[in-house]
Image 1 (tube, rainbow, N blue to C red):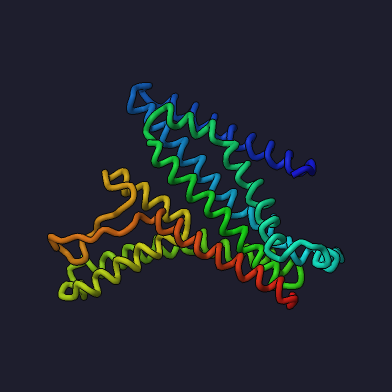
Image 2: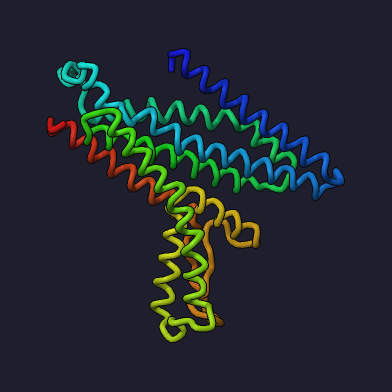
Length: 284
């Protein structure tokens, strides 16, 4: 945080986001009728672009802070000295996590004035903003925890960096693409003319739950599906689905962004716990 690189990254990031926001605002404003509906469209476009950039930021910048946080100390020859101090393994892990997540949170919160512009223009509700920020911040926490865990398991910074980015890419991009392909197939399996679950409500529920869980793994698919549900006038926290075609009964499942937040919290806690146990066992 005290190094010049931290301020340089913040300056470059804000310059890019502000530049793209300004270009988008000018382009969207100049192509409309300057009415209320046009203002709402501009606000919604700004919101989606900024949140998308925040998601990419935490997905591919945060792991760089922690992927070599522990084995990097060993490569520099200071890990043994660190273990000889009165600092416990848990304190080491939490301090490394706080340093990484704290700077990432700073980058995210630095764009809040631009998101407030989207609220001012309309087309976006406060709940949408809160949900998007919660997903972005929990994603930063998960990927930081993942980097620490891999760093504790591997002996070289290069190897841990490659593995961390591979897993992060699989979660963010891979699962989003998988959802894009699998969701229409699952819908056809349930609601298609040749549905094989028409006579099995239990199987229909299982397929629906699997579908929602799959789209909740990636922050991209979770936010897109949650926003689509809000645009259709659905509940912000729950999604009502019919387990069978034409069924009068529906089941309420948590919105994808809610599932993602809970899932990421649990996985982050497990990764931090395993990292601490790894350090405490002196097997690193």
